[in-house]
Length: 293
Length: 322
Image (cartoon, rainbow over all chains, first blue to last red; front, side, top):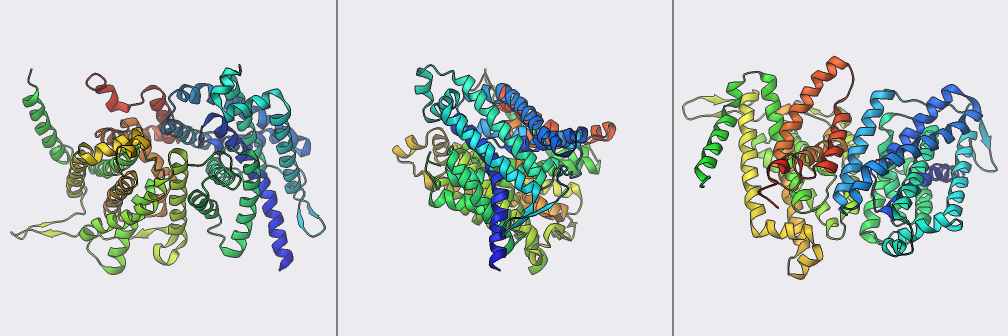
């Protein structure tokens, strides 16, 4: 019983690490640009499809790593175009409703466009380890899940280093804290916006490959990661990257435990219940940061 | 120049045309589309009341629609309550759920409210899918009774199974609701809503109790959406949890944005246009064998927001307004 509980927590941490990656992208874009991107999960979906098609060319685990790189580049380019031609014209208007609506339009467009191009049948991202299992001290899991976990953790560490150690990263954080002051300090805001959106999209794309490796890939898969990423960012405080990391693990664990001990059918509701409770009781999120209001 | 008589005649002509439509075109499929447009007019107008006039971005509107439909259908199926009473009861049930979204809106705005409302509707959708004893789960409810026939004084019976007769129920309800909304937004209540949309703190400082207004407008909007849902349930007589899906909300908001957000006639134009456009595209789909309908919806929504923020209605009234 106790070992089952620990096993579930462990599974939750692995799934949570993937949620983290997607949620960090969302929270970065929101923090810096004030864009609540409802099409964020569809970038994950696109990333997963990039991976699937790349793995048709080169299989094995070289292919899997290559798929991640291709997915990152592909989704990054799409993000660049989307930021430049869709969101930037709207940023000067400063209305939430337009930005949310346009991202919903993008969501509808990408989801159904993907249905058109890729078909509705769920696909799997080929597992380079052929679903080989592994036993760690108390837990058992599959090799691929463990790899996904390590990859997410490495990416998160890279991102933290990028944001704290590089000049660009500092400029991004400065813009997030005070846009006008950054402008006065000679930071090219539009360039920072592009970089932020691209980095956020790349994270979503990479997260999508991992998400697709653990679960399945289908055109409508994008909505769930989007909503979960929103739950996580609200839990951790909007725009707060550290909050998103903790939030991701908390949601991952809460979902696996809830799915096992409470009800499998309502597993996906846990994220929403978290959103509503957090916003009503601790609107600033667990880790402070910007006030959610 | 006095344009009043001209406007009067145009209105009369319009009313006659709308009333005569099912007689002019006898095709049942066309009449079916007219009924659907009418239901969507009520639904989109109710959403516009929140997002357009009050600035409350509700992305869980399909939940209100679905609750109204399920409530009225279940009352008729399990308790044998007449659908005529079920229509307002469906609205009232929805309106009670409107309180649950109205209260969070006191403190939340913009994206936060949007996400909370999505959460609300997704939770309710999961309930409607998993409470199998009551809702039959994803199979949905079928065999919902149609609106009961009315016996006239001379022994004539009006049945509401045909599209033609149902059309009049829908069109009369929609017209009444539009009239009520017009009166509402021109009243002090509506002006307060609009001032709240533009500047919430400013409105509070001049003594507008924004919380009370938000709660009221949520309840009114939910009532109307629930009413539309009940109409739909007794018209199609088969409902499923799909009614509460995000896709349904997105259809509503696409219609409103294309028609014109925050205008009285925008939702009407959008609802009619998209209902017919969607059927037109269905024919096109049969020819090209591709599922292009929603791709076009998404593209239209993006193009509308970037290039014509005030929708189709905005194109015509640019000169008179602003």
